[in-house]
Length: 345
Image (cartoon, rainbow, N blue to C red; front, side, top):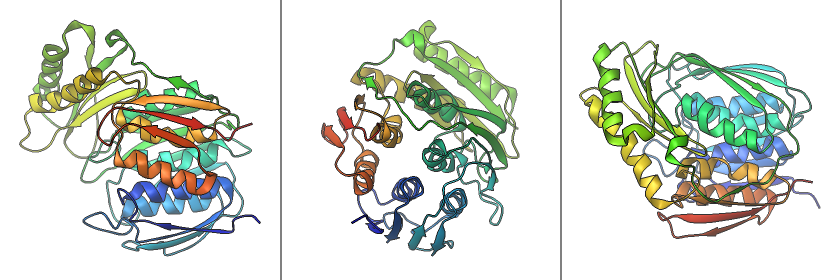
């Protein structure tokens, strides 16, 4: 008898928004209704925040879902998908609250179902593009989407406007073509340092900020990793340092009173820690790519610099919908190997 309603505990594992995004992506994709209780119970401000609510509403639109509990602060949500449909969509995190909620997290929730739609989609997302506690837009364009491309998913992204904390106001455009047959992967070893690049950018700050960030990166990384200073825009002051290469990216954001050199050091420290662990994927991509490994044809294996609570929680959510698919080897916080038997045919 087919599953008609899946019940999930939103406090499981890391107890954050990842459970919501992954569960609703899979609900939209599989057609299985889901009810989530104790949403984001593990956070200081539990329940739906603006970016989570936007993700719920966005996923509901692309699969014509019936939803209850879709309100700011709600800790319970029922989501009944109907018909998945590609098309042209616009979603604005700040439409009602003026929030700088991360557009990249909304994009990651929308991509799995829209890649399985019958027709192509164009998605415009407005909100925060470079904000704390989320991957910056450059991570999406330079790390996540290239990894998907290697699996056979064609997604194009353009950054139209930068959006910093607290007001956001950024905008990204996505063009998503159907990719119902994803390829399995074997990502076990990191790319050479020469395959990595760096950038420094600042908006509404003195010119020397971006230059000092770049200079510090060059001191830390030497000539092996080229560093470029690029222009940025935005409603609010902000700065970014970003290092990236195949299957890995490392970012740091400026903040009031935070020296430019410290911003560069944070990104460089994360990069060097990743290099020391000898894994192919950074800890964030390992978490984000799991759903696609589960949908790919055949077995995949990846190595990650760290087995995180996010990763283990994501495995749990995916397996609630698709059955046992993963083997995770490695202790939490340490390097790990993840094997997955995909469902694709």
